[in-house]
Image (cartoon, rainbow, N blue to C red; front, side):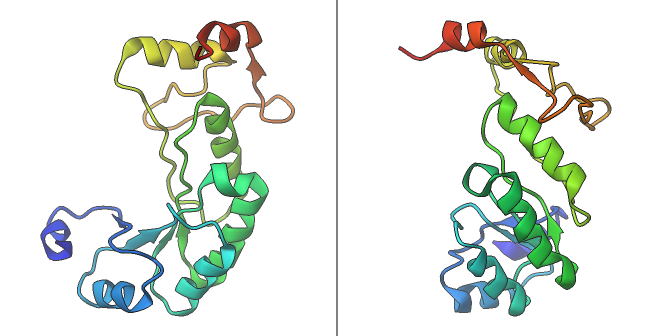
Length: 166
């Protein structure tokens, strides 16, 4: 499959196999030029360190929901001496987006940030209503870093209550 994907020139091949099977990762790495990215199921920085030492990871993908901003920054610091890029995972809401943007601005080996965009307009409107300013509106593919203290957002608690799952 990796060879088939090569012709499309993806940024990376996300989780092509289990990170726990180093031999499988080594085999995939040796058979493709597509960069390999891992992080979805990793909750221990030592796993990233082992993959980095073996030169088996090209894109480090710490999950912000698991590591938080500080933990993801520490994982990025592990990757930096290996010249490995960081593309943090984020599948949360707009508060997570605020954390992701601040993380991106704080690490030198940042590569790209995925921001989940719901398919339905009503879901996108909900996300805009929950925090202000609305962070998830991109400008030519870029997101603005807020200038206010903390995460730079104000959480609309009335909207949270309005959209709370019953």
